[in-house]
Image (cartoon, rainbow, N blue to C red; front, side, top):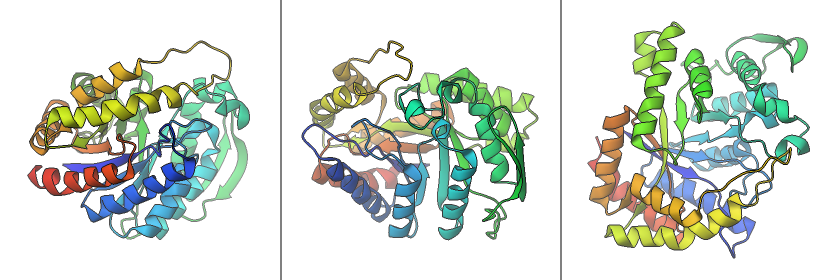
Length: 341
């Protein structure tokens, strides 16, 4: 079982944006010191829900600050960027880090980002498959041309080539999946899924089963299907008792969620609904390893058994406090990880 930290660079009420980013950097450094497997970096634009606008840029900094831990994006929002530009950045980080970089990509949402970056609503609604296919070609072929609906250009060489490491493979790519359509797309390309913290074990198990069905239909080998390293996103808060751990999150997270998620603006004025922040926080406490170390071990083990997923990205900054986040990571590393298989 591999456990990593999910870092949102969350700006809690009363905090500055630099404070949120500095906490994100410290989280990654301490995650390595505490023996975690990876750090996963979120990307958002124009909202305090997360103040990191470029997960690949922050990943570059953290890869330079660390020596062992993997660093991944969770996720880079593909409709906002050119796939070739993102592919070049991923190849660069893969090579200079010795293969420690994971590129997570996703569709994002119908947000005003699409207007600001000029990609338009179609990039989100219908052009994601074309963008993903071009990105994957860039990471696997020596030369690439494009003749699609959105991207058209003559053949150019891939520089730097991401397959120059000894393993002769490019960076790992995972895809955030929130719908059956995206699950199918991930399966057809043989890409592991990144499954969100709002999903319980039953829903995640169904998505893994659907992925396997589509992967078999696409001709993926049994070995590839069984070996797919899907990632379960969740929340972790370690304390001596469950009530204490839950109280820490219920005190801090609703204000952040209300402020952060409420700041999203749709590109086309479509109405949007938001979960009740307190109820959502309480749901996360029920679904994920929130409580004493033994409970955390039991919940992670149960999720792995029910879903077949053995890789986790856990939000460690739910308290909104740097000292509490540091203690949370240290306890996760010293009191939970040694008890996991």
